[in-house]
Length: 629
Image (cartoon, rainbow, N blue to C red; front, side, top):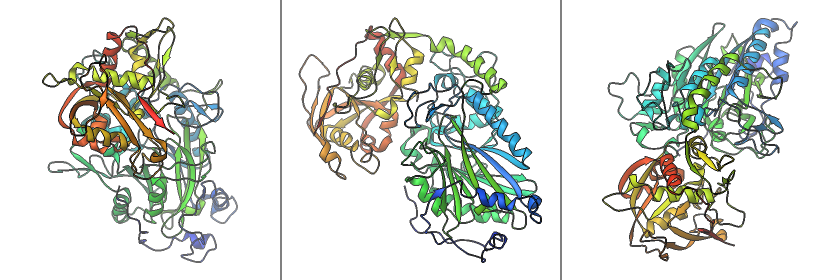
């Protein structure tokens, strides 16, 4: 991703804030721009400037409270809580507190709005992308229409697009904004737009996408798919929100749905909008950014501990006129103050994921300068507790209850059985294994057996699946039944299977890409495989851009009864994967070189068909990938 490394030149004059705080005009912090601290630091200054009795203090500044969420991912129901503390990711806990659920989230937002108004502040509710996509079946079965409706009911005002907003393509995302129904077979294929007497009017809030441009804007109302910014008036003061997703979105979503758009650099995009907003009389600017950082201590959700990641550099390099950055994407909770190019403080926050937290940003606008008083800005990450006695929104609960009923015919359809009643197939690799899992084997085997990707009589002999696309263990009922709902929890992306021709050398390159490159070196992505086995050297994997894969054997005739043979670099093999990897997702770029590609059916359908054909199913040993110490 091309992001300028230099610090950007600041526009405009110094804020009158320096005088109000007793500082020399233009005074800067002695800390370098990279200095970080917790985003609660401005609370004392906020209290000082709004202290009753201070001449003009009580009514001098306009109070603005922002209630921010990110990475909701259609999580209408609470995520099942985990008993241990540990990471905030993929669990219903925030440390030891069970959290989340749309009805609880809506209630907390309403409570905080009332508190803000009682304190003389104007509350606005904002979001930093990935509100939909990779959603549980309760939302995904209906193309995320329930989640958009619920977020509108919560009073969301404005949101940036995220990468998952593009999971079903630009046209479908536009429908999320504008409304309307799809003719999708009324649940026959596991999805049902506008079920029963439900209608979908679209989002009441505005999606923003400043860095998502039409490749050919001819005949379009604007060069961007969505508005780049939204201006809100707060007691006569103009506040602008710029919304952006990460520039690297094409690397992590399917290409077919974004073929007509391009994604531009976040810093360059936002900074280019500053002069436009200034001409409109806007001095207070907030960026809603779907890009994030990762703290070293993920339990310290109101701190800023050793954060690293792309959003840090972005937040430091955005123009000095931009007052705060509300971020997401990494599913982490953090509350930071960074230094802008002039050395002035700027909030950088994120509220975890799936509705478990809300960030409340307390901002003051000086009516003399029409700008946010940056040293007085502070934030608080609040847990959306869902335990006994916590209030819930009756309207959102009613909405959830309606779709819980409507989803039952889709969710409860039995698609197979496991040989062990009440058992499960794990997506995790044993610590001594090379990285393959029993569930990864099952999915890859199902892809190889998928009749929809047979091209001119040529069946795939190799299947490759990305581990990040396996989102849960496959769980059966007490008698071993596997439902569509359980399978969908495993593969919620509605990806298509794609077969292609690859040489042995290209297959080797792909396997090595799981251990090479800026992202996969720091977090190895061991592809789940069918029709081949391979070894990899842990020592080589720890070295930059060093091939780690050793021996590769392949079932070149597609017959499991015959022995596998060493892969031949010059031989062409028919390989099947999903469209995400086929497009080079997760930095497996060599997939894009595949020839004679054929797009088949959905990955969830190949899993379903394989379970039906192998009923009851018994998990295979995890011996396909071997790690060499």
